[in-house]
Length: 302
Length: 314
Image 1 (spheres, rainbow over the protein chains, first blue to last red):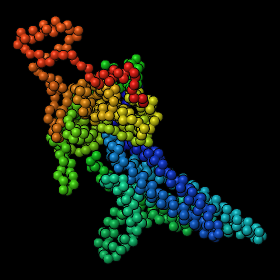
Image 2 (cartoon, each protein chain N blue to C red; image 1 turned 180 degrees about the horizontal axis):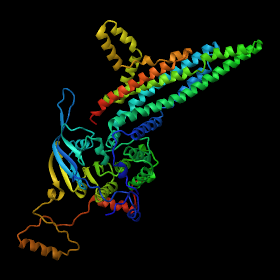
Image 3 (cartoon, rainbow over the protein chains, first blue to last red; image 1 turned 90 degrees about the vertical axis):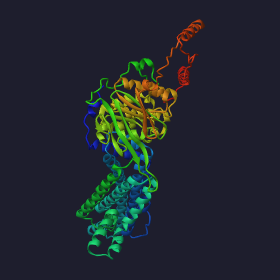
Image 4 (spheres, rainbow over the protein chains, first blue to last red; image 1 turned 90 degrees about the horizontal axis):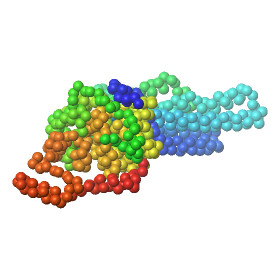
């Protein structure tokens, strides 16, 4: 048998393979904790929302379906981001699994990146599946509405191509569009920022419960961050206005920046530039929080 | 001596190749571990006084040696080990592994660690656990696969390889812990209470494994409360108390009673005993003890359970 030491002779201070091993292990860990039960609950909500309220107008029915489904998607993704991330580090520390991992040639930053990447993979995979379910239901609902409307036109002998095209264009605007996927992408970005923030909190937190409570607090505050900033900053001016505004933005993420969902529900077209800007902002937050998390974790006494 | 893996017949074990490197890579320095003037102070809350866990401890472990760190609970053994592994930073002093600072992550490339009462990811099976740790050590492909199977065989966990670690007994956790510590064929093995919670048969097997690894040139640092076993396996020991190293040296130097000699006779008739006594008196010496030696309870347990093969099922 070949000697394993041959492959161990060189140590690299950054290894994508080690990060991927930690990330995939995190995904398996969370999957086997049955965290994706949320998926089933989400599917039930979408199906229920899709076939309720038949008395409403077609565009209202589609709007309500999108409203309920994307709302559920937001809540689930945020809950998974907080709960899943909060469980990881404190549990590894409590179970002393961290000792066996960090006593291997694994730098602490790789451990953190691997754990966060695992949560992001789970969130991304979960949201992709939910997006597929959601899109299918919206498409089905949209098709049903269009065929009902065409049938109604036919009964009135108004089913000329122009009318049919107008119905398809009008209903399609409230139905399945690329903006809906952009909305789901913005939900993923928001959940990713919350996961990075939870990871940072878990680096100095003493327990899973503390991490969950504090992360939840920051998530709620993050949604009202703009309001808070306006309230504080309106009483100040010049240098202090800018400094306090910046500090508040750094400490508490402005989660309203990622709210593209409303526009998607309204049927507005979400521009690629807006999506790129939101993605960049999320990346900045994720990298920033992970870097600060490492500063705490690097000196943590295990 | 031939190490016999758990649940394996003697004949099978003797012909088995465990995949260890038989010839050690030579290091420029003869020291595998060097701990120098090590002090560790844990800062606690504002009102509490800082806790000095380790005070000015220095020792060296030579390459290929089995070194035992012994002492009562809370004497600083585990803290010293954690500093050697880079899990804690020293307040004063330093620790190095094969000449590299223990704070450098690269120093862990050559180290295998079994913590006290180890826990692993409950959601993984035994085989998945070894794959996980092997990958973290840079193993991949057929090398990882071979090494995993070798370790499962070595620790007698082949039959439990597909079971989730969450369902393992304490002894089995200790074995999978040993397997993960050895997965990358380290040059230094650090074992914190490796026999804690393990039955006497398992405990004896771990002792045999330590002998086997020593023969293959692996340096071992071990802590245990089973002093009889430590006496059997260690070349040198350090005794810690209240964070200080109070005694250190070779076992025989520390425990031999210089002015006494022990002779154990087999099938000696009463007449011979009488003559020996007379000789002793003639030379103005003194018989301190005379009687029949007893087997140990551990040995009796192992012999009895080996007869009925009543060992822990994997």
